[in-house]
Length: 81
View 1 (cartoon, rainbow, N blue to C red):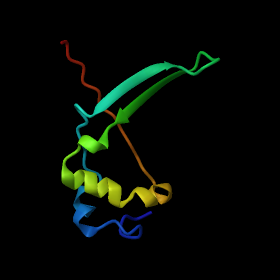
View 2: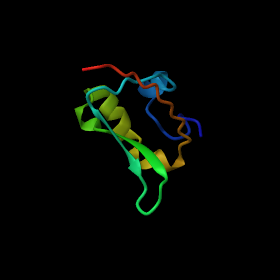
View 3: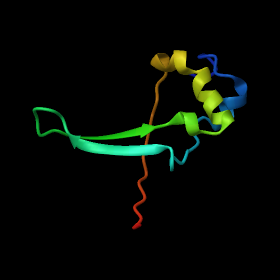
View 4: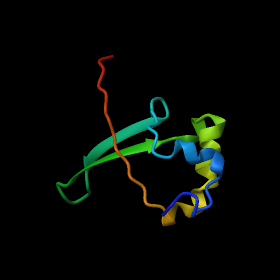
């Protein structure tokens, strides 16, 4: 579906398809599904810590997420502490 068809405010249209760096607000979990050996990888993102404009954009479309086609990609950067 097109973002304008979903009623996303026009001020957010220029951010569509742009990358976002999730740094301090993300946590990564991995393990196996209970009762199987199937592995999983999960990333939780705490949007409450985002700056006002991206947080407002996310909250403005929460009720329309089910109608969206979302593509997501990850680039993982490993660094030693």
